[in-house]
Length: 453
Image: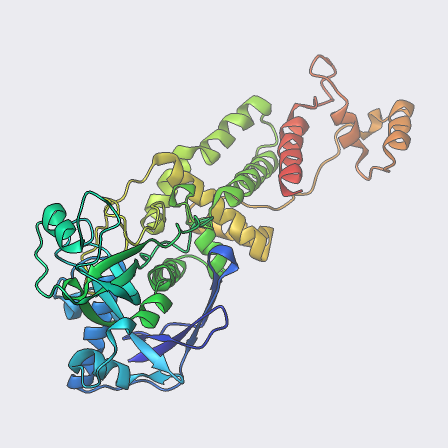
């Protein structure tokens, strides 16, 4: 296996990803500026069958508890394959794995994840032991409707306590794994203490500290898989910074800390400028109305939508909210060994918006020419080359135009441009073009400069 160690907020490496394909060094942030670093180890990890069995047991137990979902029993046959392993001093913690699988070393039940399967409304939750209470099942119940805990469990849940003198155990519900990729996280509710007889408690093989440390893992793995998936897309396009690519491919509906909205606004403005400039330079005899029709064909959502699908970019759009414990028909992610539903809605404009966001991403990383290269790559044929300009009416430059130059504080090299800019369409002089074409170009330039600012 290739081995990549995971560090969260500069803490010790508690977990590693064992994969069949190499994973590059990655660094990214999650909610509340939580910093995650993925560091590949130089040496590969080779395991025997027994060790592989220990790893799969840990992997499946961990995610079954974190996500509250059953293991489907098909770990090796899944399309994506990797295992999560616990680390100690940057090496796989085989001692922990062996204890989990064989229970050679007895771990105090206070340190283990607890289930209470026979009590309704509690059988889907996980708990940790807060303390061993001095009270027992014969102690008075807080609610006067019940005589004692024996009376409560019998009348309320139809459960019989066998050992009446056994001490009660105070437990607290463990938090579920939630999305660390949202724009914000709600504060957790205060811990509510509950008491149960020990015979109702069932211990899992996973220790509390391992469970708590693993809470961000689903979000981390989801993010890593997104980076790797986008890397596959970029191999068919042009190289791009992975964080910019992730942002450009993430819709607002994903409720992620990343979203293409700002990029889409900028990309839309640059696309209009590039298309306007290209058409202005190519069709010297067309008026504003004719140029506007040609531009509309280039920048329309229909055209961008078709280009996106033709390049298969739409397959990589992230538009579904990541919720590790949310059982939605659009649930997009599960770790290897667990059923994954890949259904998701893709809206028409969303697909077009992603193209504009990618245009902006290429522009921000490498400039105008790179953004135009990307447009040409996906079959939006735009060039940005200024042809030699012929001066048609510089002889019409007058003293009034000289006053304009003083007012504007700029000396024009091609004075015919100033003449054209101040010529209204009502002018009947055949030698002079009206300002319509320049207005067509200037509108796009102004929009881009304001958007860029």
